[in-house]
Image (cartoon, rainbow, N blue to C red; front, side, top):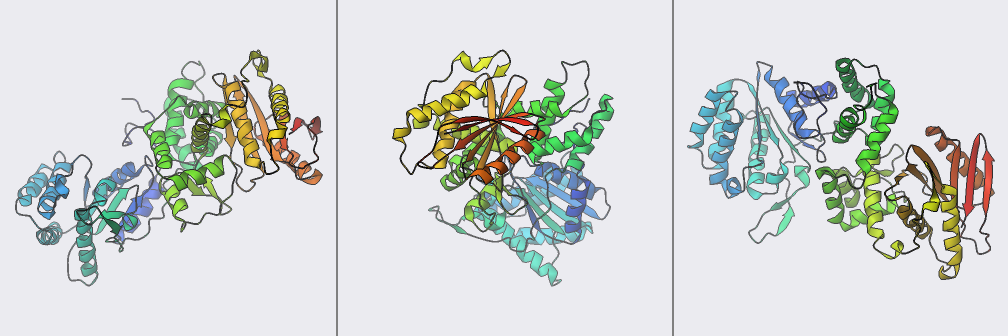
Length: 525
């Protein structure tokens, strides 16, 4: 069976190309060896299940360890009715997990489950089992979110907590380590405490140490995966450059890295005789994954989490559309929730940013599609062929037409016309022009909320438009330098500048600017 890049479920070393996570596993192993209890709480499709599987295999290779790896996924609600249901169900779930690898153990747990009906019985069974094996028994529980919102499961964690504390005083025998994996950190989950569904915070897991190991892929780890792929295919790509570009778009989000690689391997490269990868192939894969017509359960979950949390939606809109800069403060419940779902992360300067460029573009496109249904969708019918000439988009004409539109409706703009209104108007003006022919994406500019860079693609060409407010000649020269530097990243010599001038005495004008080795067309509105 040939290997492939996997974008569904568990990654298996013998079947899938995988980043080298050995350093991460070694760090987790150290926590287990130290007897720590902890939760691996990371966003959806962030490699949690794969990490647990690799951890279990490494532990089971040691004679002094025994691993019990289970999941409550697919068990239904019956085991959580009360402790008389939960306690025997737990042992049956363990039996089912080892049915094919250790039938004797499966039979033992199934038989013992008939004798267990209370947490007291379960606690005693765990103590006796650990003594009986003479090994360090480790319990791994995957997909914990479903069960950890339940009073009975929290009681189970409370029992484990009590045994952990007694073990520290040498008054009990229990698991060497318990590892929970899910999106949420159990310490902060709400629990169903009363039948009337009243909720309150509960922390039965305050013995758990913080899990700070970075599960995202570094460029080096991505490069290791690409190296294995290249050897199999007999190709010689520039692995460091490609790995850097993959990381640039994904910030190391495991699923997104695999998805871009999968697009490149299965759709972009096959039509060519030369199967060697290039950075341009990764760029094309990025274009494919951010298309609004393309959807995955991960992107569905991304939008659902925004729609279900209005404060988070508003904060993200402010960042993506208005360029607002916020300090990353994990004590802020909105920022904490955004990080929990993998939407927000901390930039190097301590600012809050959208986790990755793919998410930023998907969010941007979604918000703009919603705004198109409001008053921003009725600012002109600019969809004619005059904007296109063979394989080129006439960005100069786009800016001139937008300038004419704002000039025509200048009387409708009061003195408090905010900068964000101008940005939204241009974005709404632009979308129907390029819809179906190309696409535009917004580059994040963490640390400079006064500017917004748009990259427009049409066929094989790219155009960079910077939106900026007028702050005077000095700031204007700095802005030209920023745009020039950004054009260098795309090896472009021509750029466009849309300047919003909010002074009372202003002039609608345009200018051809030669700056360094660049030609920049600027329009003032």
